[in-house]
Image 1: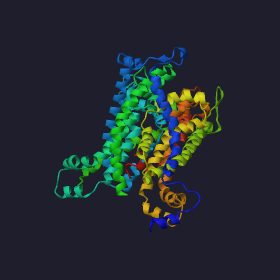
Image 2: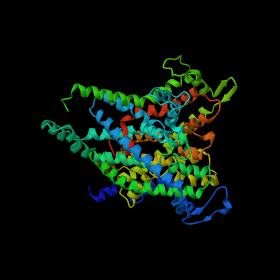
Image 3: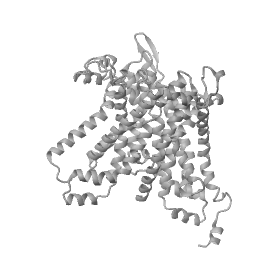
Image 4: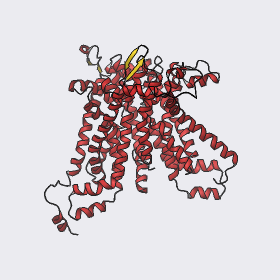
Length: 307
Length: 285
């Protein structure tokens, strides 16, 4: 087929040049997103302003004041600490649990497949509704978990309404919702591993711990990294579970970044501080997502290669 | 692997049982609560055996709750409708916008294509409130505050990246030669897209749509910030229940059951594609 015949065979009429076509196809999606990008820049501007909805007349640029005041603001350090703590604890526990469950279910059998599908249900429950479910179960008056806690000697265990156990309670809900996410990704990873190294190891009578640490874990690393970073990115921004469960309380026990920004905006109407908080959170997620995307791309290439 | 001892099998069984109990118990318990009257719910110790009642569901569906203090209106059906409408429309819009874009990114490596695709992906990971808080102020000026259009637009933040990246993968899996052959036979690019690419990527597009629906349905923060009571989906509406006076725990449970059933059912139906969708196309199930 020569260029000339291709030229001749080109249909007449409705024709868009090859160069323009991809732009035309992706333009609508882009336009919709640009509308969403504008507020991002507005946030940057707000974060450099003294801006309270209750005092619109006093609105003016104070440049870095919002950020500088964070250094001496115990509320901010509390926010940073609790956000990192929450993200760290949930992701670590979910990773360990998810890996453990994935290994339990690794062998393809009807029962294992059935269980792995069942475990998807918490993940598909809206996190806000999941928090509501746990709120009902931990109600001090009639909650079944409060009753069970009293059976093992924890009288008057206050779950999310006591500062000492609030973090534990929301972490528990997070684990309930998101462990299946890590589990399902790692299970897919485990089942896609080549079998030869394991057969060879079994033939040579290599100890199981050696197989796990020297063969399974290294080969699973890209999956573990992707799942972990995915969760870390979401977990440091957690809002739904914490807000639905305690609205950041009791007191400021659970005022993670997004909850604190929400309260600043809607309760103290301090737009400037709220925007500055979000910019800091964005900087953290931007840093994490850059690492994430590299890993994610590598994994994606591999998945496409198998296709 | 082959020489599993009896002890190990027992331990595995116990571990699996604990896992299933932990992850299934809340759903089962809330389901049970939804069939109980307030009296049985409040009884201590909690009852495993009770006479099931449909009163909670009737109250929600008719929107009328008759109590000793009088009749109370429950707007839950309105919330449920909002969820359906917002999710379906958002996904339809995202498919309309996202599938052609995904095709462009998969087939044509044009200038800036990767940058644009990654910008779209980065929306998935940006803090929602970063965009939402200024948007509330803008929406008030534009008259989009508390409108379906405004909400559907913002829902594109969840739906569009998901659809774009999953569908792009499916388009990339179609050998380009099939399309070339069809083009050479004298068909336009549009005919090629419609007759060859779309049908071949069909299952992937459907799966991406289902997943986007689930994520849109489960979203909480967008509607919490941008919608007031009459436009709120179930995630926000059900939460308002717990603070409103007169509503009983059985009705809250029934509302939760009705709210999570659609996504759970869809997830079971589309579970083959979940791995791929949850990892935005990075891992194949």
